[in-house]
Image 1 (cartoon, rainbow, N blue to C red):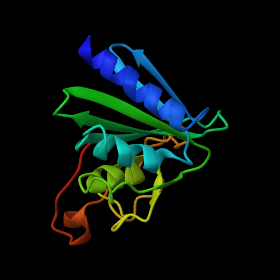
Image 2: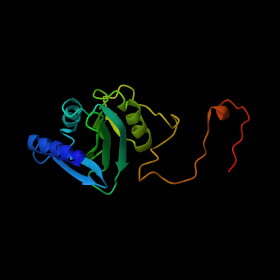
Image 3: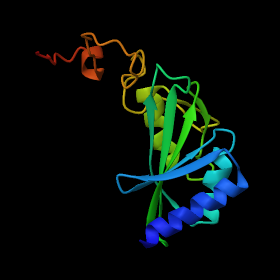
Image 4: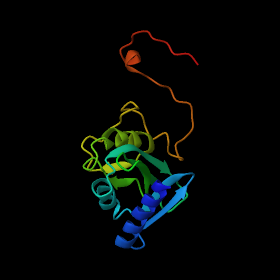
Amino acid sequence: MRCIMVFDDIVKYFSEKYPGKVSGKVEFKCNFLTVDKSIFKDVLREMKEKFSFKYIVDVVATHWPNRDMKFDVVYNIYSIENNIRVFVKVMIPDEKIETVTDIWKGANFMEREQYDLVGVVFEGHPDLRRILLPDFFEGHPLRKDFPLKERKWFNKADEQNLGIRFTK
């Protein structure tokens, strides 16, 4: 019960500070704070500094091609001190959003992963490049509009002609 009370306080605080730009709900026993893109960095910075969310667990993005807000970016943050987790969701109309690596350095690889797989561009990121897929890979495979077709994969061994064979 303490976590819900603390989360309610967080929702109340930000709803009063940014009227109409913040909403909160508990869904499937998870705390979701949805914030407008125009204030999301201020909210996340304050979550870290005022509410002690020192740990960023994950950054995930989802592509919704049939919506006006085509992408959701969700920041999974945790306060060890208060034993509470909050998922901060930002809905964006295109694939661009500011980086949060200046707030949590640990977001670096997480943002790179979402750039690589979903195509979200984290503006201001110190090293935004592919992290899982090869540089020559075209597209972002976790986007809903990614073409599902058979692809031939190559690796360094193929490029160097080391005789490694792949079978279906």
